Image 1 (spheres, one colour):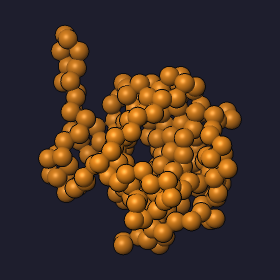
Image 2: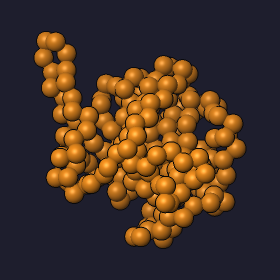
Image 3: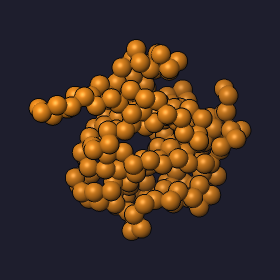
Image 4: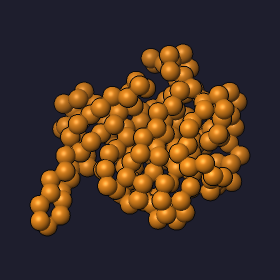
Length: 186
């Protein structure tokens, strides 16, 4: 398992080791011990699994306010997505910046997104399944979002179509107007 830093401090690409033979393959998708070796200590408490039927489905940009903020470990187990993290920690040198990566069933990469970041993804194929671990339970009263096409963030989504959105995601506020309580370094 390899842990690769991204330009956003704390956002990490995780590349599991794939062991294959004539039968197929085996992969360790999470190892608390290997995370500890990297000085990453997370107590995941819930696993989530989403299915999106259509290419161009966009979910996000989502986060939960502190004290119910969530660290997420995201992977795509069927199809492919463009996964995005946006730094929303006030005072951060990378505030409002984003990082995106293709996660797919084929490449088996994962994205670790810490508290203080909004998260979203766009499906690159039809019939996509995404699974992710979180270290805090879902708390609807702390649930927030940012509009997917906020020009101040400027995410370069890889598919140039009108995305398939939920009403909630389509009506989310801009970053400048969103209610959030994250501070860089604390």
